[in-house]
Image (cartoon, rainbow, N blue to C red):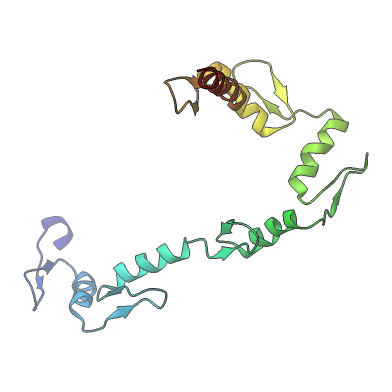
Length: 178
């Protein structure tokens, strides 16, 4: 069998390429075709269909939907519609326990935990639990030692943004006292 011998019996008539199977040769021959693939969104052109597909995919990943009131961009029209609610007073999601209203369902879900006492997010390092996913992410930094907030004026790094803000205030006070 050709599969096991590695023999490539099908040569390309336009270059030195050889294929073990006719399907591989036919796919290769597309590279020599006179067809030019042109992008409708930019001036990109290629004769290789595979490269053209990869290029089109790059456009598909672009954030084509833009908010007219701020610099928010997204690939999804539904995400843009959801985002645009923050620019209006429309808050369709209402808490059944109090007068709280939100433009986002996820914010209401987090808020309702104040009333229910639910704390679904647990620290993997200790027994700490919280109702908010962002709070657990910040809490875990205590255990991991991660310090993502860096001072631009010295080599200080902080676990929390509030700690960095206090640190920067010391730089500002020192500059003002000079």
